[in-house]
Length: 128
Length: 308
Image 1: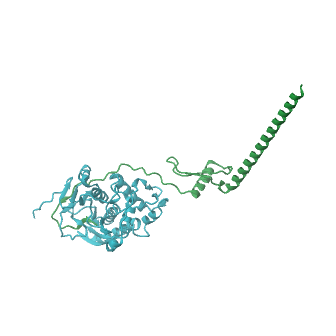
Image 2: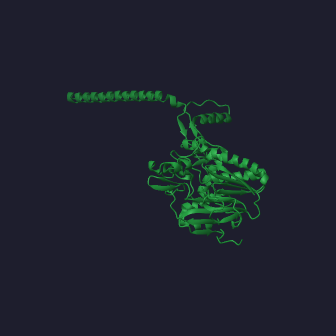
């Protein structure tokens, strides 16, 4: 192999290795920054872990729901889970009034209309 | 028939009974009901439930069964009148100047007060849960139950007194009249006037009802001046200002006093279309134009001289 070709190949290999080393270092740096950010966010949101989200009531549920981020504890029964959730909800949010379903309402007429009379009135109906 | 009168809910109250011996018992029952409604529904008592609900706008507020009933009646009235009678007019009424009992509004210096008006939010935004006994109104909303609470008090008081005494009872609260029990022969005679404070032997026709309710709404009373304009308490929710229709006084007979008062108020607000609206519902009514001319609707008795 001519010397000129060998030198060119060695230079090309060295350049490739440099680029690979740079990319590796940048990746390591990025991963470190990301890990730091996650650690900071985790520390900052620790107090909010207890209740992370309050979902408003829906026409189906009629009550607000609370989502927790804590690891689930074992519950003795479905009722135990329900009571625990209800307890948390009652302490977290007030119940939203159910939407009032207005039935058709009409203003009702009397069975008999008033009649004219010459009797002495007992009261006066007027504006007040 | 025996009767007694007293002041209640900022107006005159009259209780009539067919059995004179039952008057005292009837007065006790009526007084109890009227006092309960006042404590629940008054806009001017700082300790009333309604004042608390208005003060906690935007939050779910627990209410008593009586206020829940009064609110349900007010919302039903809004449904039945398609919003012509709306309990969410409280804020605009207050800004317009009706911000204290009317006895105090009347004596206020008109030059020192400038009226303002606020858009009426609308009854459909009131979230009432009658089962749980809670209500929530939007932030900035104020309720006024003036169009229904007094009539509801009359209905409840008449029923309670009739049940307690076993005789016929007529209750009038500021001209909102409710009858319960057996009426006297010929019915309960009632004079119709612009002002419920008019004398019994004053002007106006006399009609008799056998039961149910009869109520009059008028723009001639509860009027006040503020700045350069004259105002009254019957607000048109569509404009958020006092109704400016052609009728000065409307009297309606209904199955109950609430029915009658809701229809009378709706007619004042509705204006020229009121006679058709009342006739469609078969509500006997007497409408008086600003000029004094009278229109009778749906079987309201013609006003002609009676033979002695």
